[in-house]
Image 1 (cartoon, rainbow, N blue to C red):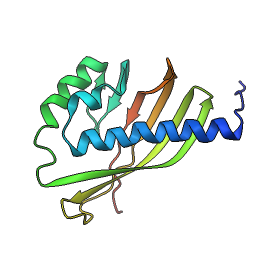
Image 2 (cartoon, one colour):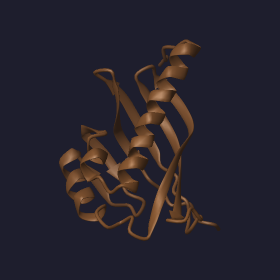
Image 3 (cartoon, rainbow, N blue to C red):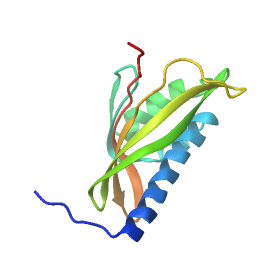
Length: 139
């Protein structure tokens, strides 16, 4: 199997576009906007929550998100940072994200999350396709 290389200018632009998707994840979480969050997923996406709940397809992701997101940021919030992007192909990327939970005053609380987002570019837009969130435990 071989991958098609992309030039540095394209790589930089695609990473910025991917960061915008992650910024929208953050925005939708912080502002409890389930429809905005769900719109980032491809229709046949797979998402596994930080507690291991497997959700298959945008409809199932939407039902879960509409149930848990409203009210979730009442006492805390989350911040997301892209740590690494691995292009599997020019239109498919594995994106490692750092997720921190914060008080409304900005102080870190609890354990971090370590999401992995597999994203695909379709119709000129990056979409979440297969996502796994994992809680980082201090062992």
